Every structure is written in structure tokens, then in C-alpha cells.
Image 1 (cartoon, rainbow, N blue to C red):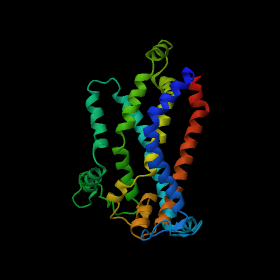
Image 2: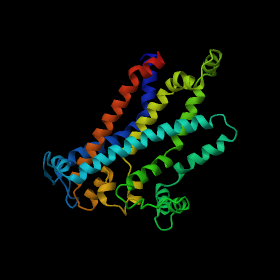
Image 3: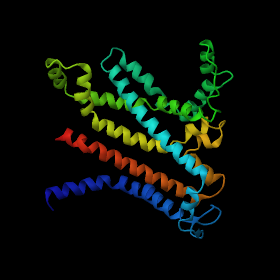
Image 4: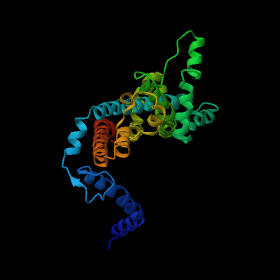
Amino acid sequence: MTRKGKENLTAYLFLSPILLFFAVFFCFAVGFSILISFKDWNMLVSPIGASFVGLGNYLSLFSDPMFRSGLLNTVVFALVVTFASVILALFVAMALYKVRGSAVWRFVFFAPMITPAVAVGKIWSYLYNPSYGVINHTLGWLGIPGKAWLSDPKLVLPSIVIVAIWSGLGVPMLIFTAGLDSIPSSYYDAARIDGSSKFKTFICITLPLLKPTTLFLLVTGLINAWQTFDLIYIMGGAAPSSSTQLVSIYMYNTAFSYMQMGKALAASVVLFVISLFTTLLALRSFRKGGLESYYA
């Protein structure tokens, strides 16, 4: 065996535990979900004995107005939360970059990430409370009438989106900070000598060199946003179900309230396909004139 072959074999031996774990807990779960999505399984009988319904679960999904509403809400929620989080995190990272005492502020922005989502949801539910919440009291001092933030169908999803952006700002901010550290200072020195403005330096140097970081954050942010469940479940209870119906909530209710596991797993397969498609689309759009030009 050649030296390169031995190195590859050693690498695969070290990787074998995680590959085995991945095969058992991911590939099996995905394959099982796809198989059951074609069956009418109510979890009271063996999945093997459940009747095969073909595309029946998928046809039932797309004829269900609650699922279509949930799909639209999920797409809006994922796109708004992901792009807003990435853009805000970039500006926060740049504002705090090399500022005295920035470590304290970074911890302040990162703290929500280490707080359980249940606690975050409960705290913001109190803040949004129309009777004794701080937000309505503050608006009252300014002469602005308070709102029923979590029970008004038009306000509940935007209110939860704000919390999701706030609680998810810490990690992208830290990763952008690491990305800013990786940009050679010689580029900025050359731009300064050429008399480049700060805005032009940001557009021509900082932004292009942060494309790999931005791509990573967009992809991981979208994947996380598609699967959001806890905040919606905790904070959206007072609103009509259609206004906070995300696909994840629809899957939970279908599986555990109506005992239609086949239909719930069909919804999960649809969500998986959408997540995969958007991930590939993001990779393709950034590679085109982005990563290739960066690594060239």
C-alpha cells in the first residue's frame, strides 16, 4: 500500500465511529421517515403492518389549508429571521470590532444563545403581555396605544420573529468577528493609502472576503429556521392557530394530537426537500462569482 493509501485508511479508521453514528441516527431516520410517509400509520400498530397509501399522505397535505398556511408562514419566517440575523450580526460585529470593552458587549449579545428557548419564550411572553408587559407600558408613556402582541393574528408572527432574531444574534456575530480577524490588515492599509472611503473599503474588501463566512451563516441559519418549534409553541398559544402555524407545529399536532404519523412524516419530507433545495440554491448563488473569485 502506498503512503497516500495508508494515510487515507488511517483517516477513515478515525472517522469510522462518527460515520457509523451518522449512518444509524441520520440515514436510518431519513429512510424510515420516507417509508412511513407512504403509509397510514397511527402508532397504535406496527409500522410494518400499516397500510400502504402511496402518495395519499402528500395529496392530503397539499389539499389541507392549514398545511399550506403553515408552509407559507415557514418560508416567510425562515427567510426573514435568517437574512435579518446575518445582516444585523455583521453590523454588530463591525461596530464592536477592536472597540474597548467589546468582550463585555459580545457576551451581552451571546447570552441569549446559552439561555434555554423555553426561558426566552416565557420572558418575552411577559414583556409582550398587554396588561402588565414592559413594552405596552413603555408605549403608554410615549402616548402610543398598546397592542395585543401575541393574540392579534397580524402581530403574533412578527413579534416572534423579533425574538428569534434577538436570540439568534450571538453566534453569527462571533463568527463574523472571527472572519474580520482573518482579513489581512495589508488590504486595509493599501485601501487607506489609495484614499478609499470607509464605505468603499467595506464594499470592495470586507464584504467580498466575508463571503465564505456569510454563506456558512446563511445555510446554517436557514436550516435552523426551517425547524423552529420551541418559540412558536411557547409564545404562539394565545393566537389563532393559522397565524402561528409553521410546518414544525403542523407536524407535531398531526402526529401527536391526531395520531397521523404517516401524514406528519410526509410533511417532514416536504420540509426536508425545501431545506435541501434552498441550501443548494444558496451554495450555487454564492459560488457564482463569489467563492470562486475569492479562492482564485
